[in-house]
Length: 91
Image (tube, rainbow, N blue to C red; front, side):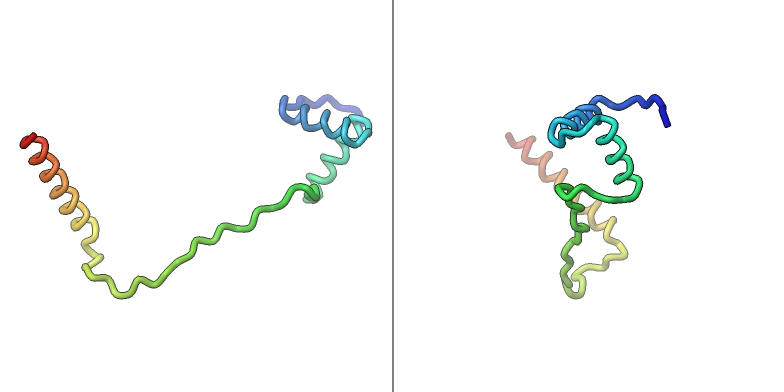
């Protein structure tokens, strides 16, 4: 089937590089790339990254009531702002 396709510049560069490296025709490289992509095949040089897994740790029983964590954070922030203002006034 003959059709017209508009390629992004980066895709064109990749295809042209593959044509040079493999010594195959543009049509053959494009068809193989599309076939592999549509069938879910990956290039041997393309490794699928391992899924990220965040390590977690048991921190024990909370030392403060976490139901009011936002209120505690606000209070600590207010104290820090007041301390900063006092330092600025003394200078």
